[in-house]
Image (cartoon, rainbow, N blue to C red; front, side):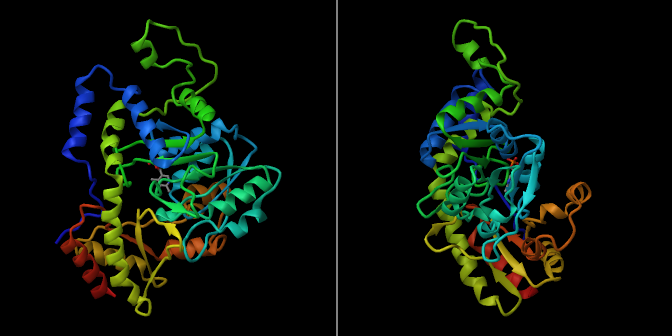
Length: 374
Ligand SMILES: *Cc1c(COP(=O)(O)O)cnc(C)c1O
């Protein structure tokens, strides 16, 4: 049997919606992006949302819009995809890592204040695997020290904790519609934020122009000016069309992953003594069920990873800690031991297949294969 690590859930209806855009005149950022933005903001319960090219672009533009750049420091987690810290570097600022909680893998809010100094401008928490960070606490710390909060919510569209959803307790929340994310257009991203900042972000995502091609297309030609220097990080109408239908089904897609998650938990939580640990879902929170990860015994991960692959089970490692990747080691001098909890999870974690199209037999095969290898 072969079980893919991920298969997207794009339907024929989504494809038809994208095809309609492709038969129209206007392919790039226009009315369809606007429609998606409105629906996405309404879904999240935030003031506004801005469609961009990726979550990396979303993080980068949020930093720029908040005036963060050279000489500034941004506190984040080492246990994330490299894009999180890379975006801070793209803005010219410096990522400062803080170790994570053992139970969730999320940034340890208790340790954040130790890393705040006069250069610190923002905190960038990552809602790892779909479990939200303690945003009430992080917001309180940020307020105490006059810092911005930018959420990397690439895993967490559907999440909630203490009544707070992504984008509701921060200056900006950044989402990904990359090929393997909960909803996808292959590549894409969005920023949830307040109205005024959203307008600035719409300017920054398209070179810094004060009028877009859509404005020139729908009304008499108006000359644009360039009030600020922006970037080329906009979302296309084609991507937006692919996302609108998935957003309409997001709850159904979530329920399907939630059922698969509960089966994994029921089948695998008894194996703690046998060399397999699981992270915790925080009580009273809604986990977005993006990545189901198991923790192997130290030193046994890669053998198990390869064993699963050899038996046809798609797997991934999310993530090897950012500070130990070559570029970060060489440019910032990080060594093993700097963030022991993140390193421990990073050495032991394996992500298993989790997506609405994963069949019961396929999941059974994944579970049985894992048990037999243990
Ligand atoms: C996927 C991912 C990103 C990057 O998303 P892109 O849309 O590919 O730029 C950033 N952060 C995390 C935690 C991710 O998993």
